[in-house]
Amino acid sequence: MAHGVAQSVSESGTTMIAAAIGPWFRATMAGAAILALSGCFYSDTALIAAGERVQPVDPGLWERLVPFADDDWAKLTAEERQAGHCRRFEAANYCSERVTVAAGPDGSYRVTFAGDDEASAVAFAKLSGNRFIVEQNDEGERFYYALAIRKSAGRFDIVLPDCDRDRALHAYAPPTKASAAECLVADRQRLTGLFGAFASQARAAKPQIYLKVAKE
Image: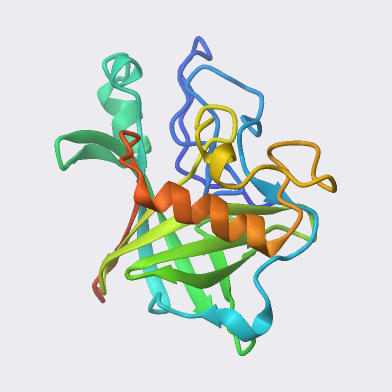
């Protein structure tokens, strides 16, 4: 599975910067060595059909900004912040890495993080307005879902709903009999219901931010 690379661990092993698994959506928490996979909506098969894929992201080089907890930010040394390409952005703390986005002929994208050998397959489907459902798949494993908000031609915000924390979503799109596990999305209808409800709600969580890198 592809990994993000903007990572730094302190000598005591208690600080980790933006270590990502399934790098578009999921990130390990500071001080944790295990993957934080719980809470993600997923499916065992692709739910975005080839005919509904859209390509709103310009191919090329992008910078991914991952939010960093304020409490852990204060513990970072100057060297760790430099190693993780960390900075303040829009009054919040972020660490960053470079991402190469390539458009595929099938309407999807191949997303590769600097230092990674494998690319992630990513597909977008229009939800409403400037909002999109994003589907990511790594090496034929599970498909994970997030909300993308197009702020401009050079910026996308990625927000990940939490099926455990965002309990109100299940009232809009309850699990089907074929999907007893709440985090498992078994059909396209439920996926649309979940993300339609999520897109309409106020979100306090900081997004992951993707900024187009100007040609150097």
